Image (tube, rainbow, N blue to C red; front, side):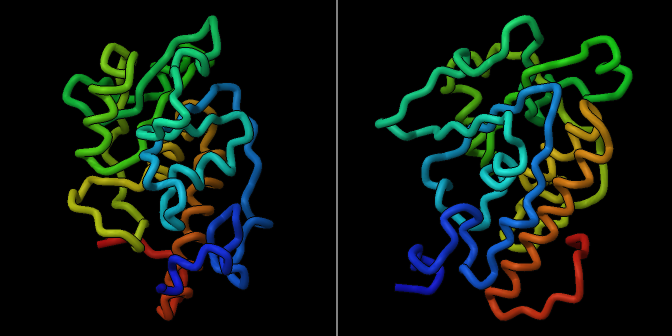
Amino acid sequence: MSQRKKFWLRCPRCLMRTELCFCADIPQLTLTSKVIIIISKRELKVPTNTGRLASLALPNSVLLAHGDQEKPFDVAEHLMEGRPNFLLYPGDDAQILTSAMMENIGKINLVVPDGNWRQTSKMRRRVPMLDSMPTVRLAPGRPTAYRVRKENKAEGLATIEAIARALAVIESPEVGAELEQLLALMVERTLKSRGALVAGPQNAN
């Protein structure tokens, strides 16, 4: 069994090897809006998954596992009443998320599917409510800083980056910056665990 799969040698919370645990550095960010993250069941124990990582920093968020037959979920049960719902998904029908848009809306429920393009497309079709939910996407921005898993699309972002940039608009730039710093720390520790020399956070090319 490879070192990566020896879960008893890993922190049960951040999933890093115990000597690289960064739980003490995970911020606790209080939001006015609620974030619901839908993750593939197979990603729950993957150390490099960033949707799960984002949920650790957002105490009022919810992490739901798609494909877990033993723990079915209803998205509607996790949506706070009296506020609009939005799906963060880069579809052709999505409206670009802007500060001007949020000024007229206020508190929201933000649903975020976590996975690659194919997985999130399936989630949108198969998870009840998602296909009919108003969709928002991010304005074009800087390339991803996620260097530990291959990204097939140049504009692709790690889930925590997408959430960070969305919350920078919905909540505050400071919230977004803290989540992006958390990703940088996870990337640094992951590369260190693989024996890579890390000079500091860098953007992917």
